Length: 453
Image 1 (cartoon, one colour):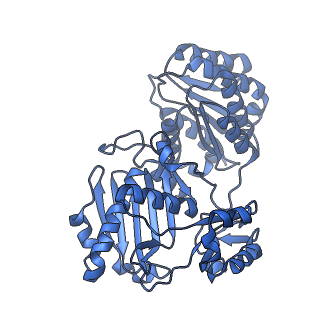
Image 2 (cartoon, rainbow, N blue to C red):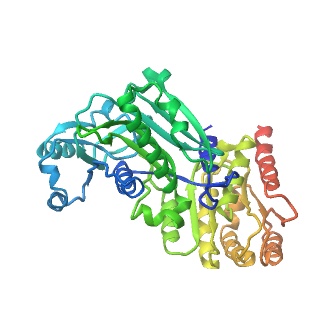
């Protein structure tokens, strides 16, 4: 179920298509820290709406030079403050992790008492390492806003009863949907703000329209304010923000994002294999991605292309074997033979570990490449298969290959010859075979061991 939710997010509007496109395909949603989200909101709200939001934020972790921070943000010494972890998790108040109406010395003590503290939130456990500090804004009314990108539409939800009790007033939540390319205007917003007093209706309508414009401009996939309010001067002020960006839009929006990071989810640490591939990815102009989903999984992927990786992953899930999927990942952007060999070695080391006697499957798949030399990348994969031949046999692993593109005939022949030479069970197909048919074969092989039990 979790995998399907993840994949449904991946199939929202991609950066590679124009905003007018009505046929979205794959994308990647990446969460960012609240500190970064508020800086993006402040910076680009001013650019797009010609208004400056009263947002001031600072970030503190174990490496922060506090003297330099105070020099850059002197308001920390003159303003009552709010302090909370900036770790991509909620329920901070329930875990005594929100400090309200503090002076700077109180904020420092609050952080020092909790920095490095291990907490468990919704089953995820990890240390608190990063805090956001911002002005304390006295207020009476709290509002809720959420904009999300879905497969064919944008969804905008608003409630005049935001904050921690949002779910207690679920009946006040109103939602509208817009097609891609459809602008948000007063007519669309009217049902969202219809129940508001006249004096607040127009300011909130204007704010919603401006935030939606920013959402589109920055290639966001989700922006939630729970809550936002108005400060004593009447300016909109987001108290809490969650934001996700389409990281495949970096070529288009990266300049606007600036030096932004995409931290791991709370409680998640990279395995040594994931760290190695991440380092390899940073050193090459190609793209190399690898995430372990189930170290004991019996279906593993070595897939060329981000779009293909989503299709293969989704197909495994559709065939009922999501729980056996060992990894999610892809190699693309024409990696050289050495890079492909290093990537393949890492995948194979993980895929042949933790064996239990039941059969395993490795899917070496991809679409029809435009520029990548299939023979060159297969040469790297073949090198890794040679090194791990005995481990592959010991793991009862069958290998299913499907690829097309430049020099694919040579690449497929090299794979067939390797299977014969080393006695490895390798099924090889070209572009005449559909991409996903090898998934069905792989699942059938894995399933045969389940049926025999």
